[in-house]
Image (cartoon, rainbow, N blue to C red; front, side, top):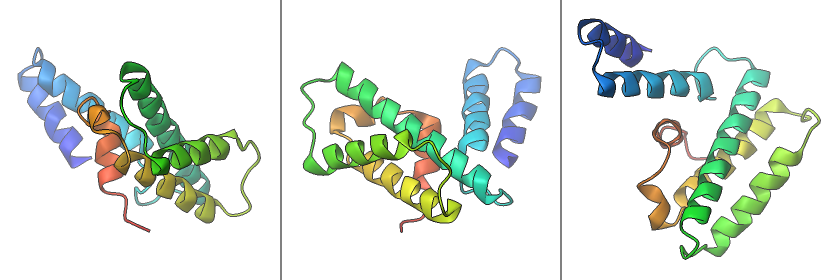
Length: 136
């Protein structure tokens, strides 16, 4: 939140600065999606982990459509299948904590297994969240 506040303060002095507007939008998105933020209840962490997994899956699908020649590793194919199955689950999990951990593990797998062609066009907010998710 401190970064977002600093960007907003700077934007007040430079209201037409598009780079600051972009940084605020990224910060807002990180704050809205980050399942690791302190103070969240288990159900909210789970919801955010699903949203993050969905965003990573959408980014991967978009990359594959834009770069059909990009090679897909077996690890990526397996993680994509697992993510789709996980997101298809409609009922609440038996354990929000375990389900959140499973989702975040898939997020890390998908993000790290992206083809090189997909790295440069990645969603910056999602990347910032994924980069600070602890390894399980």
